[in-house]
Length: 379
Image 1 (cartoon, one colour):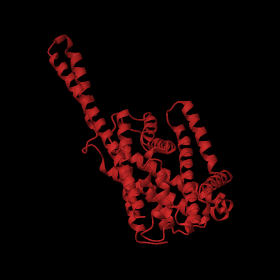
Image 2 (cartoon, rainbow, N blue to C red):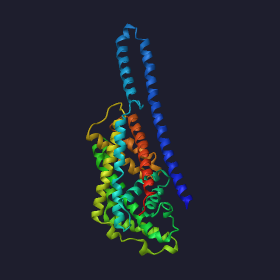
Image 3 (tube, rainbow, N blue to C red):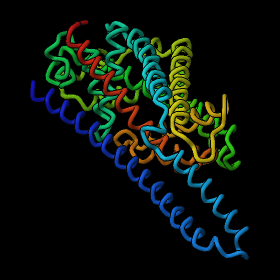
Image 4 (tube, helix red, strand yellow):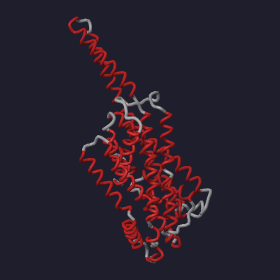
């Protein structure tokens, strides 16, 4: 089944390349826009200078010239060039985002223990990080494929084919691992939606948006309640079991005891880990905002962190719900709406593009390290 591994690898790489290419193109387009504005100011300065010698308009021309010069300086200061970007803040953003991807692995490992799937914390972490590379492939199913294969594999050569339905002896384990991946993902997105809904009240958005965000926060919490979560997982497991071939239709072997696996302590622990992850991701995005000069300045301290966390969490959650590769377009638009309340449109767009590129790079590096680790160990 080497062909399956190669096809999956090609799809992942193509998805990552296309996402990066789109972000870079948008960055260049925004740089061009700022440069056009500077050139327009230069033309206005030339016009003002030509009429500067007329005594009647000298005072007006002087004030207009100074205003244009000040605006030109501010635009050049906000121009997204290598000289203006703070690389120290970018490095901090990369570090915070990398650390922020680790807590969900603890949620996944806890779920695997609850469903009696043999997997170490190190392997669960590697599987979690490896899965991020698959979200840039259409359908998002590649995330599940990569994570389940890493969890179930017992050797270096059959990690990816392990999710194929031609190994009947592994079907019960694969089904439980898939359930655990679904559990971690649903919990992470629910916590992100709830956090974004609460933080929206600290932004100057319209009241109806804040109330809608509050309803979203309440709705996001409902799926995480143990009775609801158990029911959802049972439905998904039964549907998956019915879709399998006749030689693997043993419901007792396929369906774990979710009543003992999904408990209040496990849900509370998962909420804690997921909340920590979102806070670190928000801190990473705040560093990105600080790294790029803003034309109108930025909030400081906890105000910046609050807005950054609200914007990126809401954008990532709704981007996930869109089922588009990496939430392309949806994540950016939602994040821009929130950021538009505290910064200028150019700075907001550049922050979103920078975050997209940075997150892709960090996820790719961690996925590569995880892949190399999984090649050297066994369950």
